[in-house]
Length: 318
Image (cartoon, rainbow, N blue to C red; front, side):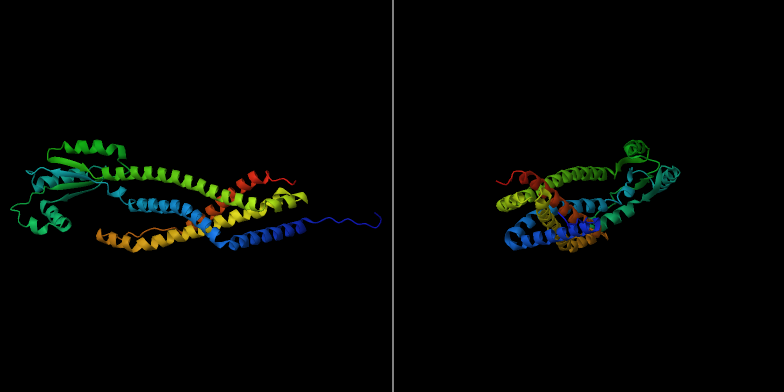
């Protein structure tokens, strides 16, 4: 046509238009969620619980690890000396063991010291005063050097020490720590599997929510497809809906975990004081909180994308 002109839209203009469109879709999808507060809140709470449970399990595991972090250095071997052993003989044996590089420290607990410690921690001080003689043996406590003795070598080392002439019996204090750590490993595997299942649950819940939203707008989608709208254009608001669901669920999940942590923090501190410990309950760090919220948003986005991709193809203009 004479006099007609053509113009090319620049990349900057296209980028600005895309940003405005994404902004509009994100705001409209958020407002659509608030239009049905009761249903939306129920969906968000279910998602939040599914996200909070793995987070709580993660915190419990972290606290269990922190509680046992200093135990490795306290793995000690206790040698209970024979009743006939004298204190001078026990001190000679301590001097011999101190010359062995495999031991980080060697100390002697006399019968009097053992009885005093037992009185302090057992709660039977009055009953013990009635004893005519001290029934407790002398004990030599050895802390192996981690650099010199491997974990697998501890038991053979204990067996060899038990063969010493002054030693009656021996015990390895690390045995229960090893059992505890193995239980932690099993718990971590169980927790990871449960977290995976709950993550799949979040995807299914978001996917089903988006499916219902698509079905409710079926006729609208058919019309805009009829006038030439692309699947990407139709898909975008639903993706933002899933994103908002996951994001808000992540925020509420983080709040749930924080509330639970505050509820049990004081009780944990009191329990630690009973064991003469300064242990403080660990909660979610700022980075972990943002990670939880991000995971929620990502799962919501993935769940909505899967649902939209499947159900949008089934809707065609007639």
